Amino acid sequence: MMRKLIENLINSGLTENEIVSRLKDIGVQTTQPTINRIKTGSIAKVSYDVGTAIVALHAKVCRKGKAA
Image 1 (cartoon, helix red, strand yellow):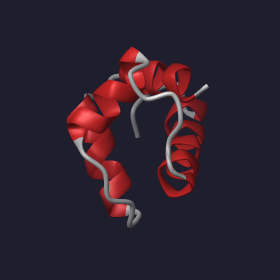
Image 2 (cartoon, rainbow, N blue to C red):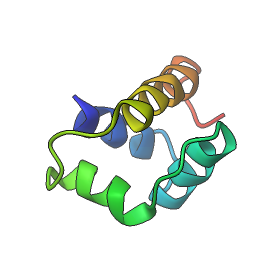
Image 3 (cartoon, one colour):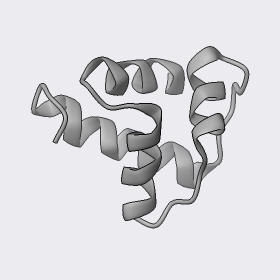
């Protein structure tokens, strides 16, 4: 699920670094390599904080149909 959400965010126009930046804006610390590992499936499970932040970002960005 997280892998698909990251792919959707990237397809909406965000880069991996922009995803990290947006997550940091809401107080969740992660790195670009972590986002890449989620995207490629190297990480199957993510922490609750990172997971809920990705879900929230996905809802915000993909609901609008473009990067916010």
